[in-house]
Amino acid sequence: MRPTSIIVLAAGLGLLSCKGSGADEPGADEYFYDCEGSPPASLKVFATDEGFVEFINKATANAYMMSETQAPVLTAPAAGGGLSASAPPQVVFRSAAMTFDRSGNGRPPASRPRSLWSRARSWLSFEGTAWAHCPAVTGETFLFQLTADGAKDPAYTAFLSVTSFTPGAAKWKAALGPLAGKTVNLRLARAVFSQGSITLGPFVSPTPVTFNVTQ
Image (cartoon, rainbow, N blue to C red; front, side):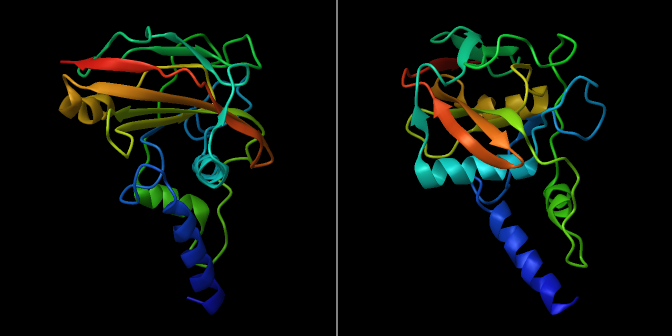
């Protein structure tokens, strides 16, 4: 490996470790949609690892911006209700800046959980050249996080470029199963990207949203 390759590798791994929910598994638990697989042809904005890191880094550096008018608004499931740990719900919300469903065909999108190796490979090759596996994000992306009351780190994180999704059953059960009988707090945030950099946000609502986890 050339000396320059070592520098790129160290820099890449340093960025990957910036996930807000812990360095053991950098990145979100699930992505809806990224550019891998078969996204709808109409989809122009992708939820990428790079976008997630930019989202978290921006929020860490500047904090989330409180705004009722710029933050996304949850419409389902009902705030204050129950979340079944064994049956993930369809999550639906509306963005402050759009009124149409960007899931492409009206159906909840399929997620693409990724391995740590896949994430690292998307950043760079062993020759020191960055991999451009997705176009630089331009448009709106959203962060969905559930954190147990009193906990520091989120139990479940999804990064998405659509306003309707259903968490993967295995990921959901693993995250919420241990929290049955507890209260979880939702962070639903929105940011606007231009060529991979956030130009507006991230925004969250000042109104708390909580759920009770059931079996």
